[in-house]
Image (cartoon, rainbow over all chains, first blue to last red; front, side, top):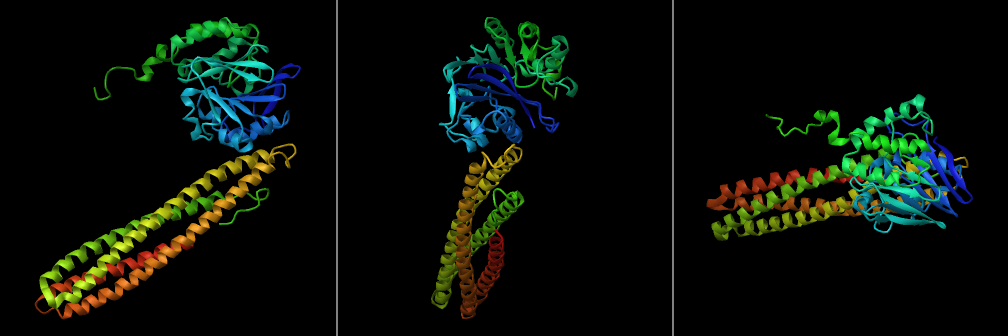
Length: 260
Length: 208
């Protein structure tokens, strides 16, 4: 079963990460789900795939009644992000899922309809949770063409979806980044291949650098805290990604046809 | 199809998959019958033309050919209705299959909860109600399929009887005896092939 760990608490306002399932099958990529609670309202970010629903649900039940979750936030449309939507709607048919407008007609293939899907405009939007506000921050092309992160200005936490993600070996699966240089090796390949646009990356880095971020919480891997957030932004800004990577020859971008 | 207690042993997805395979097989069988019916239709049309050419001596043969043509059209329309019913059942059973997977995942979540009695009982009970209502609908459609197939069986028996009458009529066809005889033989052979197909379809529906 996954474990629920509270990473931020200020009165009725908290962030809890659901992570690290020792029983998880190795063929499934590991994921982090974040529960944001404020004044009795609850939002779950990137709730995960349907196959890990039991593990996520059970971990959540150790801290709240999961049936009280009435909002989901999906950074993008991938199966490891939101294919459990139908199951969450079985639990709470009134639940609303915020996702980029680009995916609001794709995601109902996993479940839901035009009532349950709340399309986020390209420029992002403010989302009220309890007496506080969250901001869906545009992160398009990082990696999905319609992609948002979620910023909590009071907690100074940025849920960064796949940005900052790392594929960690079993013996380096701490919840927080301990040694940035050691950790980032496990993030490099992921970012080089999954992040497709240098222009979008630099734009994101510039915006993120101007935000007050105490914790940057990716959907895979470990959480960046304090100075490691800035370290990550600088590292990411410098990293060649997508078609700019030295490995581009593997990607068959050649103009030659296969027959030539 | 038996749906078990939602809090007891899980629903059997294999059962739904088998049902789905059976219904898909049924659709293939229906296509086979429609193909034969359309063959009879063309044969009957040719027989009508032949009997008109033969004149008064083939009047009876002409009447029988028209009956066989009407029969083939009725059979085709019956098979189309059967196909629509089978399509509905495919949808229902596919939906059961999808719901069953979701049921299993919800059930798995419930089993790992610290207090398994809450809070998923209500959700599982709702799923169970949906299963039951869907199962009832499949059951009703199955009865409807069986009714239509029974009707098709009667039509085929009638077709077999009149194709034999066509043979008798052909015997009185004087100069056209050989031509009419050949057509009536073809009628008989073709109609004989439908009945086993209908029986096979009935057998399939009985196993849904």
